[in-house]
Figure 1 (cartoon, helix red, strand yellow):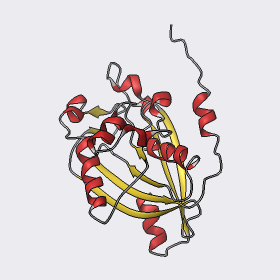
Figure 2 (cartoon, rainbow, N blue to C red):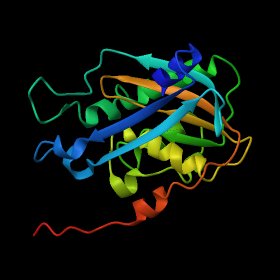
Figure 3 (cartoon, one colour):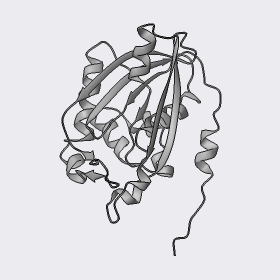
Amino acid sequence: IAMAAAWVASEFGSRALAIGSDTLGVHAAPGDPLEYVAGSAAGACVIDRQARIATLDGLASYTSDTPDGYRLDGERFIHRGGTTMSVTDVGYPSHARGAWNLLCAQGEVAVSRMALQQPDASQPKRIATMLGMSSSVLEGSLVADRVGDVGSASVLLALARLLATAHAGDRIGVISYGVGAGSDAFLLTVTQQAEPTGLDQLLDHGVVVDYA
């Protein structure tokens, strides 16, 4: 989203397509806790100079050289810092806080909804609490409880769910996290409700697989 917004803002084009796609399910090592939550998905949005659905009012990034997760060239499975990175706040929590604080330093940030990175269904609630928000700001945005950790797609799917039910004037905060590690924080103001995408129906259309 940040690169697409920069492309449009610099007038290289009138619109840009931002895509987040991950297939963590095939990169979780057998026995790794990631195996229980890893999923695969893709999400996309168009950044347009006319801001048809929402305006992008703020953007901030916070990065560090933290190997929360990585794969060496040619390797299939992801090496992860594991629970130590979240319990000690070194990974997702510290980067999310850093990006959000930088965004807040740009001006008043008052949001009613949040779309957060979702490595599982509980982490977004923890991050919201850490930022001094009620878990109610996450209402209607969770996807990890149904499709697991879908990496870079999770924030876009969460945002798509929120935009489908938001009303003009609503302000939405967005925080992503990549295990490289870094976070981007965005502030959006809704201009009109988005057209239904059918995402909720897809999320509800689960198929139980018997591995026995």
